Length: 281
Image 1 (cartoon, helix red, strand yellow):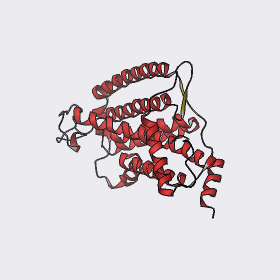
Image 2 (spheres, rainbow, N blue to C red; image 1 turned 180 degrees about the horizontal axis):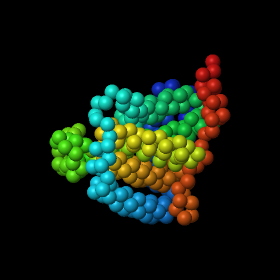
Image 3 (tube, one colour; image 1 turned 60 degrees about the horizontal axis):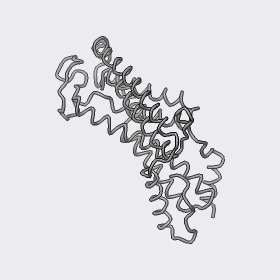
Image 4 (tube, rainbow, N blue to C red; image 1 turned 90 degrees about the horizontal axis):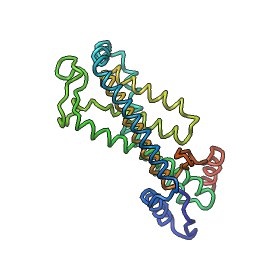
């Protein structure tokens, strides 16, 4: 939802809403225009390669040396005292995270359609950032679901025993959807996306992601290598979405060396003034 050309103020609200929504979607598929996108693409490829190589090595090492030990140390499934962990882990559930982001996007469009000038521009700038966060999580979850189906790793103790090498590729059932962890995918994609836009939130967001990762281990929903794989998928996928936005000059700029940096966005005080204006009689 980048700042569009001003829509005629006399247009009806439904027409304004349709125009705002249409332009918000159109900006995502327009041709890339940033002159430094080739440098950014090379840096993305290099970083993704190194991150994937290091992640794959760690995943294999965990499978061989730690997965079995870790799941045997965890409390049994259904332990009554784990109810707070079951509540906490839902903060990384992809359906919940995507639903909240979708509601925020719709609300932004609904309010922006009734505004004009600077107030609309500020709100649509926030909307573009919400689009980035939403798509970072959505693309990551989609990639994770494909990998789950292809790999077909059994969850801890599926089959009646602790076996970290219980694989049935293309099995397609929840019991064999262990690698990568969808919660880890979601949490790390969300953490990366928000940190990419607002670097000051990096420590808070990655602390949140690590906590979600740990809840999946305590609940015996995944092996350690599953959550590491989920973190890797979430990070790499969100990096690719960030490049897509930067190449179209949406929310990000590209430096001469190919580094992608966030553009200055709406600040709290200005957004509060927009909200007051939107609710004023």
